[in-house]
Amino acid sequence: MVKTTHAIFFRFETIVNNLVAKIDSEIIASRENIQNILKKMDEVFNEQKAATQDITKRINLVYNFQKANMNRLFQLITVYAELAACGITDGKKKERLKEDIDNLINPKS
Image (tube, rainbow, N blue to C red; front, side):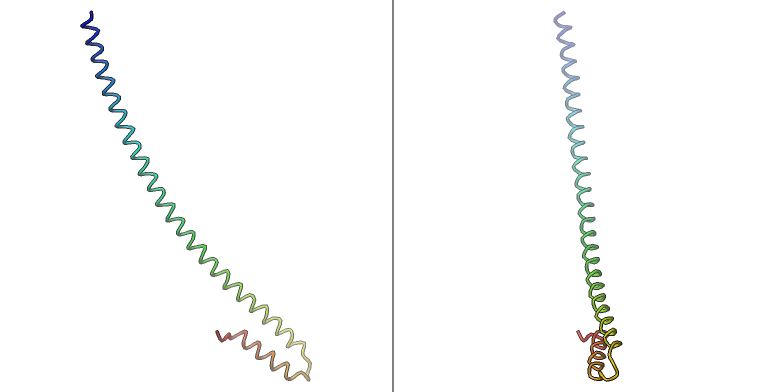
């Protein structure tokens, strides 16, 4: 009876040890797969972050360009309104306003 119990125990212990080894190897493989997936996700998110930053820079450039052009347009409208309000006798003022209009339309810088 002792020999039988010992044989059963030995088989059970062998099976358990094999299962523990198998589970440990599966856990290690799983951990490696998860780490690889996380690395890939990190790479993708970094690429998306860089692309988003690039797009943001471009949008800011366009915004600043449009803002500058709108300011010039408003100045131009103001100068045209002043020119339209000038009387017949305001020749010097008209010439100065025409120069301002030319400078706004064709900036030197």
